[in-house]
Every structure is written in C-alpha cells, then in structure tokens.
Image (cartoon, rainbow, N blue to C red; front, side, top):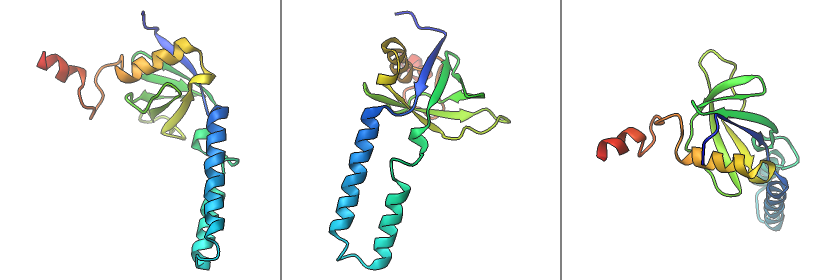
Length: 155
C-alpha cells in the first residue's frame, strides 16, 4: 500500500464516545448519591463539584471538533496552527489519541492530545493513521523505545 504525502482527519468524539462518557458520569452520580448519607459534607461537596466539572455536557479537551492534516515529515496543521506530531500515541480500531506539540515561537496548541474516532473518518485515512502511529514515516521519535536507528544497528 502506497503511503500518501498527508492525511486529513476529522477530530472529536463520535456518538459512541459521548454515550460511554455519559453512562460513566451517571454511574459516578449514582455512586455518590448512594453514599450521600455516609460522606461528611465537605467530601460530598467536593464529589459534586468534581462531577460538575466532569459533566460530559460541558466542553472538555476530547470534545474539540475540527480538522487536522498530518504530513509525512511529522508536521501538522490544524485551525491555523502548525506544529509537530510526536507519533506513537494510543490507538485502537475504534479511536486514536494523537500527541501534538507546537513549534517553538508558534501559538500554543490548546490541547496536547486530540481524539480521532474511526467512525468520523474514511477507512483509508484511519488505516494510514494506525500505520503511521506504529511506524512514524518521519523517522525516530525522541525517547521512544525501538526507534529505527536502534533497529537498524541491531540488524
């Protein structure tokens, strides 16, 4: 399979992610309510405050939506921002979390990690991201185990 020069991806959660986050939030709410008579009032207030902050209806880092274009040299562009894709982030057949860092002197990237769901992208582009995440086309990553240079040296 020939690798493209760049990949355009839609970022943000899909409906399955939103349903899972809402269910987990509701389970936490039920858990806190079941122990409401046992918890001291300061801990109960802290628990409800934490639940309010983690409410899936409010905006949070995984909720950001938009587009990102990743190039073979490891650079990316997203919403007028430029930076470097670090590669080797968490990935599965359902979703991938990309680690991004801004170029020095550039405007900072609002979130260092972004969520890319397979259902929001074409199968071809998502497969390329999975391959690039395993074996980054732009060479070895700082601090990564098993970089290309160490593999070539051992061969």
